[in-house]
Length: 387
Image (tube, rainbow, N blue to C red):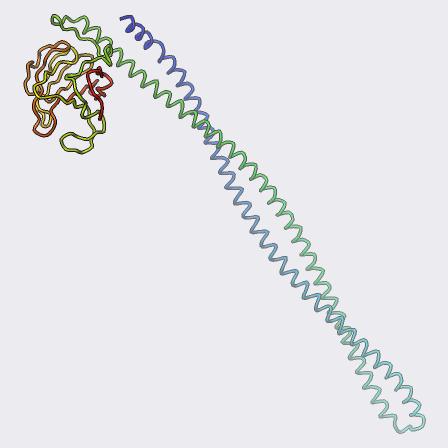
């Protein structure tokens, strides 16, 4: 009873304060997690905008580079044409210079000849007019070439100015793109830090939620324990039949006497079935014993049920109280009836003969409806465990 009172005191004090503090921490971490998620979404939007802007600048720079290449090619063609004009102009000048020299020489000679042969004046004048016309024509060509060259030089300067403006614009775009790339790198670093914090907050929140679940589970278990303690108090206060005292099996764990002494032929858990040979889960154990061997109660109990189960023979169900139930099968002769109370070691019946395999007793122990490993509760000095 002292233990029960201490447990009730623990139930009343510990979980409530722990749960309140834990809920406050959970709310705090949830708030931080929401803020972090909002920050993460904001940074992701900024990164998407930066990516679009960087992509736009990249396309614009590519167009400028293409346009610059076209202008460079055009300047190269203009320079080639200017070079060709210069060469052509040099040729014309050289030819004109030679023609002028010839014309000068012929002119002086012709005038001397004309003094001795005046009849040739008409031919002389026609020849002089022809040579002058040729010279004037070539001079006109030189003037036209000069004008065309000036035009090409002007066009070249315009293209060079355009090229300089394009280069300046391209440099500005590249500088802006570089700045945006630096901003993006900073945002990515910030995003990594935010996501790291988010993971930490999530992990902490998961731990807190797990702790809350454990506390709630503990509270449920404590509530169930309180009810069991109250039930134990009521059962202890309830008058029982003379000589029959129901106590919790926890008090005698490891000291229960088996229904029969003998070798354990099938174990609790996954084991081979004695009759089918298949491996399956067994909620109890099978103890080999000769037919007619007395079967005794492992602990004081009330007989609550008697039934026939195929493969188990006649089966008795004993209620030990406090949630413990024993199931004993393989009996042929039954000496107790449902509703009667039996004490520890009292004879319940005898082992029956088995038509399918070795004879013996099937024993199952349950707590709150869940099968327990009987070998953890029975006194093993009465059993042989060699497989």
